[in-house]
Length: 302
Image (cartoon, rainbow, N blue to C red; front, top):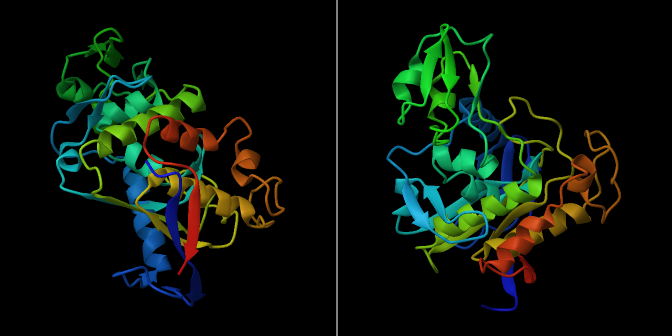
C-alpha cells in the first residue's frame, strides 16, 4: 500500500442556480441545478430507505465487530463502483461522506440496523400501532405477533432485518439507534470493507463538498451550510479522500449565520463543535488500520 495518495479537488463557482467547476474532472463535465439537487436529495431522505431489491449477500470479513456483513446483491455483484457522496454532518459519525455513503448505503435493511445498533430489536409505539398486522405478514422469521391488537416483537427470534420498520404504514415501529458513536463509525468502516472486498482497483470515489449542511439527510429539513462551498474531490483511495475532505472543511471559516455554535475560526473542528462527543477522524484511523487506504495524501487542485 502506498504511503501517500493523490486526491484531486475541482473548485466551483455559483452562477444563478447553476454550478460550474472552474475546470472539469477528467472525462467528466458537470452542470448541476442546485434546486433540482436539493429537491431530489430531500425526496430520497423522505423515503428513509436505501434498501436493495434482492436478498443480501453475506460477505465474510472477520473484523473486530462484524464477522460477516449483509451487502445488497446488486451492489456486491456489480463489476465496479463509483461513489458520489454529499458531505454533511451526522449525529453518529461527525462528518458524513464516502464511508457513510457506502458502508450504510450498500448494506441491506438488516445490515443497516446491525451497523446502527447490533443489540436491540425494533421498538413498537403502542399508541401509533393500530393492529393492521402488516409487520406480522412481512416478518421473515415470524418474530412478530399481535397481543391485545398491538404488535409485539420477540427479541430472541428477531433477526434485526428492519423489514417491519419499512412496511409499517403508520410509522409505529422504529429501529433502536442507541450504540456508542465510535462503534457505529467502526461498523460503517467494516461494511465499507465488505462492499469493496471484491472490487480491488475497480472503484472511484467522489465527495461533493457543496452545500455542507450540519445534519443527516434523513432529517426532513435542511439548515444553512456551516461553511462555504469547497468543491468536488475525487480519489481512488477512500481513506485519503475522507481525510482531505475533513481537513478542507476544518480549514474553512465557519458561517456565523449557520447553527454552528462555535469553532467559526479557520482550523477549528466544525464537526466537534456540532457533535462534541464524536471524533470524526476515528473513521479514517480505523479504515487505515484495516487496510482500506492511507490517510496521508497530496491534494491536486484542477
